[in-house]
Image 1 (cartoon, one colour):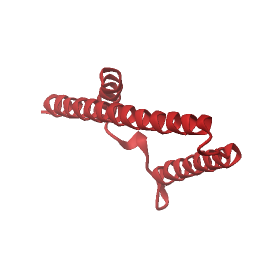
Image 2 (cartoon, one colour; image 1 turned 180 degrees about the vertical axis):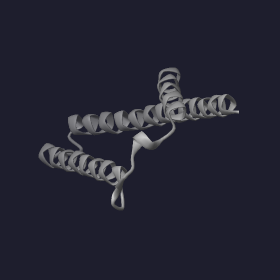
Image 3 (spheres, rainbow, N blue to C red; image 1 turned 180 degrees about the horizontal axis):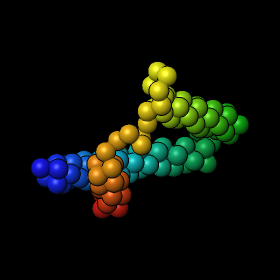
Image 4 (cartoon, helix red, strand yellow; image 1 turned 120 degrees about the vertical axis):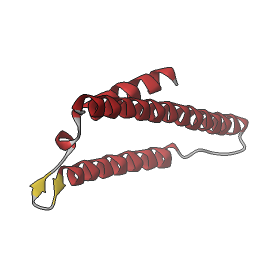
Length: 112
């Protein structure tokens, strides 16, 4: 009974990880393609003299965005490790599920 539960948990984790990794890879490809198109258009329009690009504002925006993402990530990780007064986190999850989901996520990202 325990072996079947472990195999089912590992299979579900692996399949879920693969699908999430595949989805992440596809979304990242589309976003980077669109971002490259926008940046290429901006460079071309600046070269033609139709627009002027304030590089200082772009740099400030990207620095603000990356620091916000880092702060939110730290807040999420801190919130996920404590629940009330007792610590709860990734260590309390099922080992077969987490292990197979990690392998599936890596395989999904590589195969996507």
